[in-house]
Length: 255
Image (cartoon, rainbow, N blue to C red):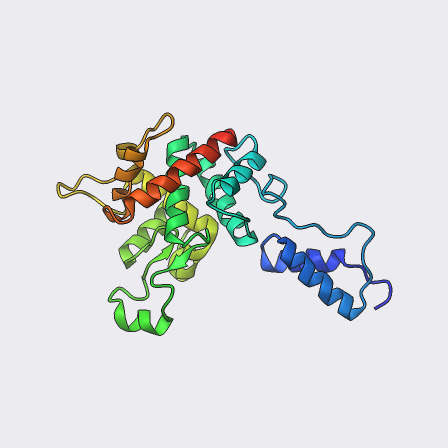
């Protein structure tokens, strides 16, 4: 394999998998190339998640993405941001930024995704720790079970999301499209803003505007009430604390 260089290999892998490289990914590919006798480039490939700057994925809404990512690491939300976590964070920031969201809205959406995905920032399936066969046997709305950052369930809700997001039937043809980080972000952003997920006993929908500030920062008490948008009061205090950390990071990043 004399004369073959590594950059085309890295570029091909990055394109096929559709995700940035972590430092561990670079080391693993380099080790394989060493085994195969492929020459090293003069400028070795670098990890893509070098702090989460705007050079990795497009950032919308942040003036200084590096400061945001540094803050979420120092806050204890993440010790090191993996490629998957970076992809999820960037997708949510992009969609929230395009929606023109204020800092409170963005902070609570990030905290919600952080909680619902067990900190992975990747969309999850309902009862993700169980099998597809279990979902088939136990969920009466199968195959329209929960998917995404905020679980989208029931056929009517998939139909609504497909229509309101302008997907032209693509979501109904492939329900797993709800697992795409950008689509999942769009469902969460529009759904939390418009109150798709929960209502009170009088039928009034729980929305971000109802519970948190639409012009600036919010308090722990406001974020605690905001849990009603998704799931009553379940883990409300925990998620509120995480929202405060994301709010500080967004502020540091110039949201």
